[in-house]
Image (cartoon, rainbow, N blue to C red; front, side, top):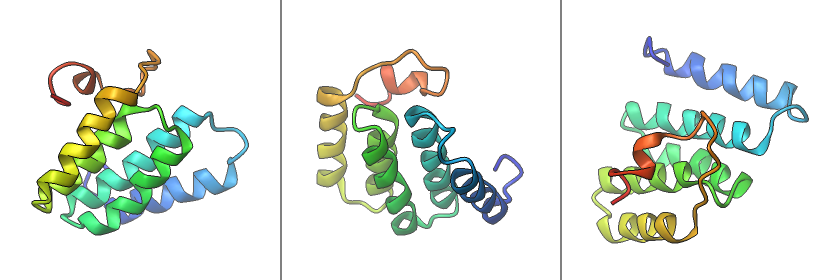
Length: 112
């Protein structure tokens, strides 16, 4: 993804999710789904990012990362009320696990 090979990134992650589905923890699966969504967002393909981000939220409902990613997606689509709802939900319902996969800025300034 860092080399902007987004299709290749998504394909690799999808294959890994399918091939090793019983070996990923919920936080790892959540993070991988967020990476897929983020790759779509980097291309400006916001509506295509939402299914992966929604899946991430379903896999780990208390994770803040997918909620903030979804909010960022809606902000980019200028749907600010929906984005605000997801950010408020993130502030109220998410739980910090201390995992290295969590984005630290989401637990400090960025969600606010």
